[in-house]
Image 1 (cartoon, rainbow, N blue to C red):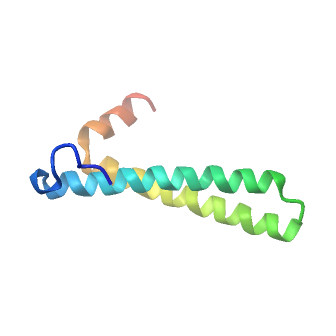
Image 2: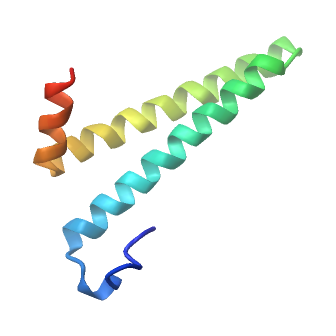
Length: 84
């Protein structure tokens, strides 16, 4: 989590929640990359299916976080709409 620059005690709850969501999104995207790498090198078909499933669940988590961020950060939502 960030907020170290200005002191967490000085931040609003809304800012803290947005930071939590954004950091969680970063972590979900990292997990997607890790699972994708594992899928590509895995030779066991049963394990590969599990890893693909896990990767896709992380994609769902990322989508859920993006949806939440869009609802709670109007400027970010405008940027998504503009670049859609």
